[in-house]
Length: 240
Image 1 (cartoon, rainbow, N blue to C red):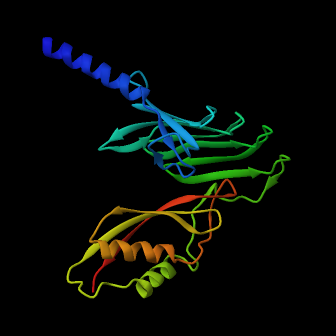
Image 2 (cartoon, rainbow, N blue to C red):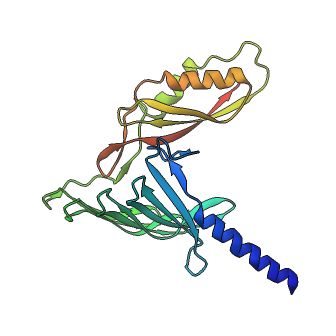
Image 3 (cartoon, helix red, strand yellow):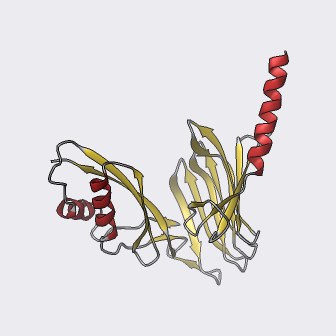
């Protein structure tokens, strides 16, 4: 019984400390060590009395609420659950979207800052069933997806061709090497914020960085019809 009591105390302490953590982030939601240069910060709170395990609340650095997102953790992977809400920096509700088992399942409703409905989509297990889009005056317009990923000029096949033709394999290469590189495709289509997330010998990492940095401009990604910065991960395998 004493061991159980001690375990419960440790759990409460752990939850309390976890809930107090404030994590600062830059404009691309990359975590920072300190508040300087931060655009946002987030606080994660355990929710044992809810249908989900954790609530992540994101704020603009001035304290205005940015988003509320609930999720479960399975093998350290976040599985979104429940109703998520996102806000304009001025405080108005931007959009809400329902999740079930990590997939969009239910309604996505978005609003313009003036309160007029911007779009209304219905999803079932991540698949769009129907949707309607309106302009700021409340007039229905031609439908378009709320998220459009960035695109390399010419598409995926052109990206593969670019990599094959431009990657220079070190002359002493005698075994397969893999580098995973993460970067941001900004609103202008440039590759920025380039980072190695899976390492290999230095020469391979230098070459992976170079070939991403020298990429031609991408077609920027869009969210709710507006160009946005998008994080992109790319595995590069060096083999002859």
